[in-house]
Image (cartoon, rainbow, N blue to C red):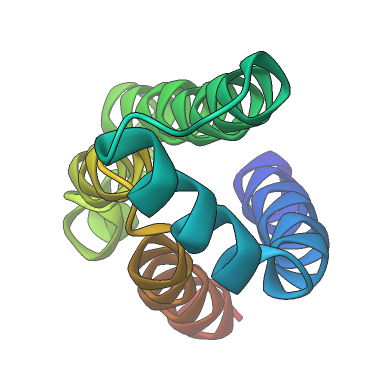
Length: 123
């Protein structure tokens, strides 16, 4: 089923990103604190911009997935379980952009759990 494949792809992308983010989240939070105090470097600012861009990419992907589920008759029964994922990804992006990268990662984990539950319900 195409819907299940798309969910699995999102789960894979999110978990890979979370694995990589986990190794640097605390450092990024510290860099964001330095930026707020005016002591950040251009490299730190570029790194945060890249991270924030990744969060935006997830939001866009989840929004596309929500649209696909809402517009595909056989997937519409599952749409309610997916609805809100893009909004949560937008929240994660905002958290990351304000220097709360660790919390943003936790928000992405909520999305992964939602997607996994949805995938299990599609069996």
